[in-house]
Length: 205
Image (tube, rainbow, N blue to C red; front, side, top):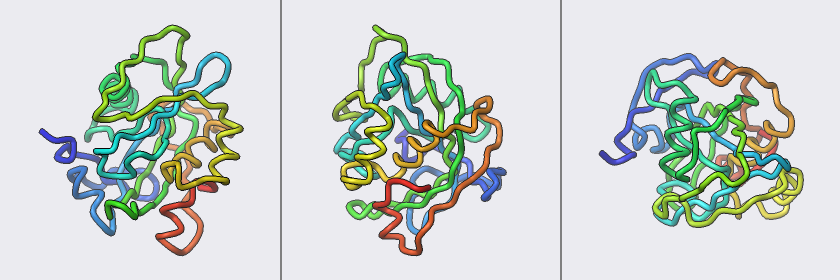
């Protein structure tokens, strides 16, 4: 089964489940709000692992993003889903995960026409030195480590190099509201009135 055929949870603005649909359907314009997660792996020096999304990705290909993203299946825990995607994308894990925030964002991909409209749980994962990484080339074009404070500044300088959700993910990492992974968090909706602006704005969500 293609990942585009997998089921995701549709949610309301407070993260309450209101149904399910396929990945493909959720990302067709105008988009349907659904549960997602974004993992940032952090090493003991505070550096974060970034991946450049593979060229075959249907949304924001070849943009730099956080370590791993995905959608829990209906009824699947965030920790289980995130560690599954860490294994599939990076050959990593399992890792200890902490939820550092939640936010809602909307972004249109100007290249593919797909839409991201996600209730995104931001998860911090502790990366141990020497742990193996075996990225799947169908998922990941490149990997690099970055200082999160410097990354936040670069997101403002060169936003089109990055996936539009990365600014919000880094913001939650640097300014966490820590809670056990999977518990409801506060939501922040994107500012601005234009979908085109939302597609390329990388911070402030």
